Length: 405
Ligand SMILES: Cc1ncc(COP(=O)(O)O)c(C=O)c1O
Image (tube, rainbow, N blue to C red; front, top):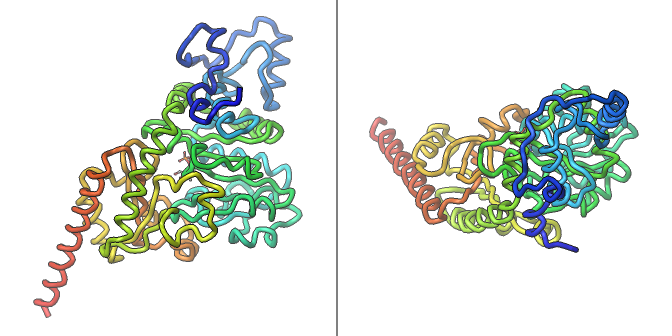
């Protein structure tokens, strides 16, 4: 039966429950598995190391874990993918895709901004790759014979710029395209349906959703995910079964969480955009923030992350503002039940070249706000109060400076 998305979030990855006689996903913590029949074990070992299915025994947790496999199948189903591979973090997932891509070439084309550490991983050459940074309209010109992958993130962290996935795929030609869809989740965007090869999530964010799991997952065609699993079997980084259980447990409420946070974020973004105490509010559904009209074509909603600047770049003003917040927690990460705020230039994107940062609008005064599931009236009161505190302290400082002159 063709099932609606919400139904799939509830039932995905439960294929073996009837056979097992269980109603909730069982957690298998085994680090190793009995191998009484060496022929069976050898066949399974060869299959798993190549990135394929187990045959008769799971052998060893780094090669396969049934709890993690259930989460992977569920996520693949929600992304419309043949297969998925889960990792101990989003960065581990990206690293494995990049290492697997090296068999095709050692050049990557990427569009800024992307998550700061992903930018660093590509720019630093840590994995032996070179990168050409370009814009979403100049992908075709950046492709070389040794280009192995195109990397984009949409909505982009932290400026919320939307990248046209279908256009990037067209420009990339035969080169695989990886879309980091962490901010959108499969609830709001399905990159594979638009022609992307890989969709990647820092599952630490909305998929986990409760601020208590570090994880990454990448989905795509079996032939590509097979190579990624081959790298994972050799380098490690498989997601722990307890984290896989928590992620799988959270999927049935994913759409509800994403939509509820999105409602609150939409209201806060409109209020902030109207408020003279802040400037440069960026949120996909605000006027001017989606010049390519991607919200209807590519995303089903704006999500629940936004960014904005305070009226002063003075670090003391930023400190005052963050210090005055009572409900919203100053912290990195996003997509949790609680609202989180952080200045990307000082934290998540501090590893990015300063000039490159400024060029794509990551100013020192920029704040990224991830809206959680609190009552929107409390969130607005919190922001309003902190902005008022900042305004009055600024006035006091100016007054003191005038009297000192
Ligand atoms: C968009 C995006 N991609 C990837 C990552 C990396 O994920 P992780 O922190 O799970 O390694 C992050 C982390 O913040 C992110 O925001």
